[in-house]
Length: 451
Image 1 (cartoon, rainbow, N blue to C red):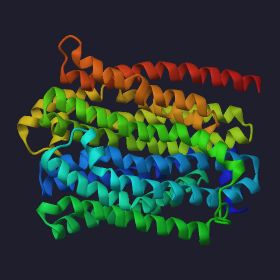
Image 2 (image 1 turned 90 degrees about the vertical axis):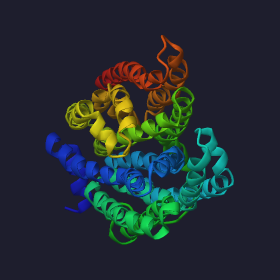
Image 3 (image 1 turned 30 degrees about the vertical axis):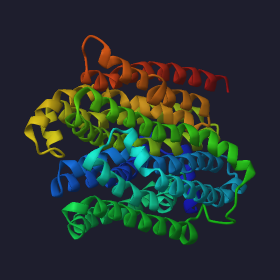
Image 4 (image 1 turned 120 degrees about the vertical axis):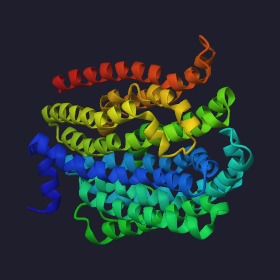
């Protein structure tokens, strides 16, 4: 039996729990190493250069999500189409995936490079950056924008590997790139010196992403049994299904950029630059703790998409239950230490004990609903995997924009909450979206029974 058939048979007929482990373990490890990029940039810069430089990296981070949004838009949308095509044994669609992806990513990355370099300073001013933080952030972000094509091609092609069910291969390639980034970070920060340490961190990231892109292309040119690069062109029949699913996935990334920009600005307004530093450290922990859940969702997507394409609705239900329970258990591994030792968590990024003490209660508040994310994140992924882009987009928009941003702006004015209201907005938003997501999933499974 070919490797292609082995993967498909495992997804549609293998033991649900074992298949979940086979898909999730490498996916989680792969996503963890992805998260190490910005996380380690912040740690090394914070420890080797200082809090101003760390804040500059964190203030820049929301705008690096422009690239993540493009990679997710095309990569996740293509991966969803691919997994359903594998379930249906639709070779024509499979053969068109990579050429269409490369065309889209190249076009969108070129736009980001041009617009990003022109408006770097203006974008950072929107997040409330000023003075030396602004100057260092401009230098960091311009280098990141220059490497947009490498970042987007590397990450989107890695998503195709995951959609193909090759999560172990995707993990190994991503881990190699991330380890290179960790090695290069302190070296290049030292080479550039304390004054330009942020440039060293930025170049370390871009070099690592270039290596990721090269390894991914080698896999699809020489190694893959299922997906190969054929004609590089836009495919009319794929544009709508790729974008319809990809948009909901992209919203999670791009709206995070808008969300964090408003957060930094509002925190500065109500508490000053110290609260920007606290928020930067807290969001780094939040982003890193999200990673294993995103990894589980990456394993969840091909399991649901392939079985949905093969009309195995019983296994769609079984996988959903198994993955959600496992994701909740994983969430506990982060939830418990962060809620019990918030000061120690913040101290990884902030050396000023006064700021750490001030920020510890807010970190607990920000993470209050994290335990529910195993259900929340997989609910969004579920609708992406079965091609129900509207439901996924509704949840993403509510969580990232429609509910969250008004609450961030309004809650500081309520009952004298002040800056505490900025952190409380996440709690209220998550509870509302969780209830809506559960209701929509129950409706979806009810429709499966009719099919």
